[in-house]
Structure formats: C-alpha cells, structure tokens
Image 1 (cartoon, rainbow, N blue to C red):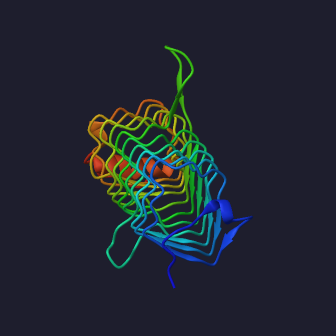
Image 2 (spheres, rainbow, N blue to C red; image 1 turned 180 degrees about the vertical axis):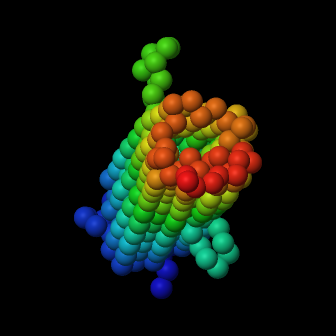
Length: 251
C-alpha cells in the first residue's frame, strides 16, 4: 500500500519499509533524513534542502531532484533506474557535493550542470548517464581551481562527460566504453585498469594521465596528445598497431 504524504514532524529515527508515491517536497527543508528498504516513486524534490539524506536498500523511481540541495548524501544499494520504462532520476543542477553512491544503479540519470565536487560513485551501474557540464571542481581563488571525484569500479558505458573537468580524479577500474569525452579534461587522472574506449573525444586532454593496465581501444592515437601519459610496455604494441605499424617479434 502506497502512502501519498509524509509528515516528518511526526517521524522519529529511521523511516523503514514503507512505500511512497507522488510526494511533493519541492522547496522544502528536510535535512538528515534516513530511509531504509523504502520505495519512492513519481515524486518531486525540486529545490528541496535534503542535506545529509541517506538511502539504504531503497527503490527511487521517476523522481525529480532538480536543483535540490543534497550535499553529503549517502546512497547505498539503492536503485534509481526503473527497468520498466528505462528511466533514471533527474538531478539537473542538484548540489551533490561530498555525496556517495555505493552499489547503486543510477543508469540514464541526468546530472547535467550538477555540483559534484568530491562525489564518490563506487561499484555502480551508471550506463547512459548525462554528466555534461557537471561541476567536479572547487574554486580556491581566481587562479586556483582543483577537482575531486572518485568514480571507481563502475560501468559508465554510453555516459556523456562532455565538458567536464576531472583533472587528477580517480576513475580506476571503471568501464568507459562508448562514453562521450568531448572537451573533457582528464589531465593527471587515474585511469588504471579501465576499459578506455570513448566514442567521441574531440578536444579531450589526458596530459600525464595514468593509463597503466588499461584496455585502450577505439582511439586514433594521432588525434590526441599523449604527453606524459603512463602505460605499461605491453600496451605499446596495440597502440602502435592502431597507427598502422606491423609488429614482429624479436628474432
């Protein structure tokens, strides 16, 4: 049985094992909420202040978190992707700084222009996500900007990272197949043990990126500046073959 309202003033502690439909918390202030084993569908959280939100073993389908403030959120073993209609949730321009997604399915979710500094996405399904122009940076001064993100051991196949700044961020052991990296900055990024096979990479910068033990495919190595990029000796063979060299074993 679904509930259509949730009065937080009447709640104490953890909200557990309940189902909600068509909640409208737009622009509401509801910090430090904890949901466990709950279902939340077709609900609106536009512009809501949900600082410290925690979701554990939940199903969150067709929900709109556009422009919501959700820093320091913790999301574990939670599904944000509805397999029936193949839709994720909308985090357009949401504040997710310092938040953590662990063992979640966020596939096809929209993070366009979201604030994602210091975010962690670990062991997640994240296929077809929209990260275009998402902000992984923190401005220290007019001349100092640095980025922070841990996007590890996750499947980002078909996701769009156009225009993102991920300098020195950790993407190790992730699947980056058919991803869009147009005008992305991955300088100094940890790309070790990834499957690195972008579909679009015009303007991509990978200066001093660490690609050791990565499976590098579908890249015209002549189209990118590989200055300072780290790889193992065995990876050099496939890169040379991509350039048209015919490699023979030593006599």
